[in-house]
Image 1 (cartoon, rainbow, N blue to C red):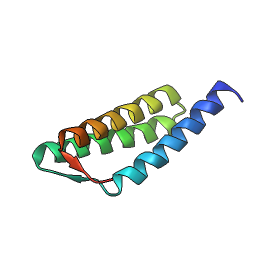
Image 2 (tube, rainbow, N blue to C red; image 1 turned 90 degrees about the vertical axis):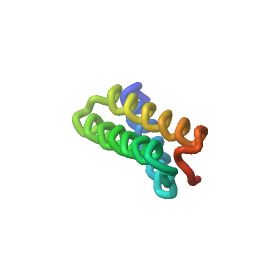
Image 3 (cartoon, rainbow, N blue to C red; image 1 turned 90 degrees about the horizontal axis):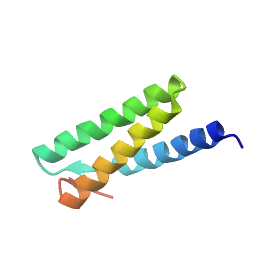
Length: 81
């Protein structure tokens, strides 16, 4: 499998997982609301870059979205699965 195909498969896998995780996430206050807004923006940006064939930036955006999600949960600003 080519590196490009592997990256495409990883983006698709982690995008599905992110979407599933976001389905039950709720903000706990203003900080959480801003974090959730940023997560969704990075998720959208990832899709944009994916459609343009810019797989590196697409994956980067997913990494940022996941990082904000995990930090938000750890700090108690986001709740859910």
